[in-house]
Image (cartoon, rainbow, N blue to C red; front, side):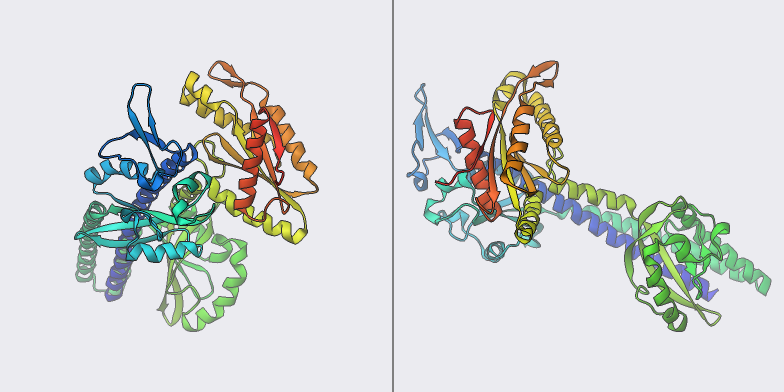
Length: 529
């Protein structure tokens, strides 16, 4: 009975610690997603404003003419009605957009720089260290901080200089691609911590009640049954209770690798009944073939000492269901000695649902939400790989910048929903024009970028570009309308026109604007000078 009580307490303690950990992880995922979403939105505002030359607002006390922008032509304008307007830079626009959220939701945000022109953009000690790390290649910085006596989650992303930003940073000697600063947000986590605390309190109460009931049952059984036969019955009842209450699979393996115990949760997770698996080799039945050699090598040590590479650890692995489906599990493994022989006890949780959610989050982080195409971050990763391969194989790689002609007229005439449908259809038409090994990315708005690798010669890229131009001359059926929208393309080649992402994208963009100036509906290869 003492052993049964110990096993019961160990199982409940393990379940409680595991659940406590998961509540904390879930809270941090929610906080990080909120912070990431806020920063991505701010960066989208900033990039849009920079791409379109800035935003003009009525001159007022809140928006005086910015002396740091006095070098910009047409900084101040007067409308036909006599109203005075002044140009604000993208960062000031983001700061104003943030203001309602700061007051209503206690959000804290900051745009910072090591070479700030304005005092409000100066980096503090925390930000200075992370800005230096950004210059070394770091992609983000995050931490938990206490601000004004309250806990906050702080996230900061780097801000690089693109062509549209140069005119706002002349005093900082910035070049395209430089990390000129960062943008950060601090999200209050008191509400999240409160909810997590309530969940953990509930978990503690439930586990205490279950533990008390289980121990009470064990004590009642001990007092009712004193004979060896009744003790066996007692153990059977105890195991059945554990079997029914456990939500995770509990599987025991003997020293020869055979399944010794199998609870009802294991039935549900793996699809086998206990009658089908007891006495069967565990790894032959449940483990993918690639784990077989590892198991065979570890078994002799486990038989001798009860130790092994996985004993006492929690691992994420793959397992097999009865139907042959491979799925993700979280395995917590321990060892126990019964009648002088070592047995392994595994608590197994099906985490395939969690893995699907994580994959969805990764999809959102690396793909455009409208078209499903790779975003700039994923395009950059693939371009780095393609350039390394091109350098090794002495092959050419092409970057093609594509811009839809007259998308604004479609939005104005039919609305942004029709414009979104047009962008989706354009993405599908682009995908049909290239190889599966090529990459098509959407940088935003009506701007697409193509990566063509392993080219035999430049004519390969020209043929693809001409194919795309011709395909876009066909009408786009959108909401009962036949819309005609052409495309202008610019091509830059590695290594002729650049050796890195910044130069290749910049030169392809220059060639694309040359195609527009030449009449649109065509492609243009970048020419130096």
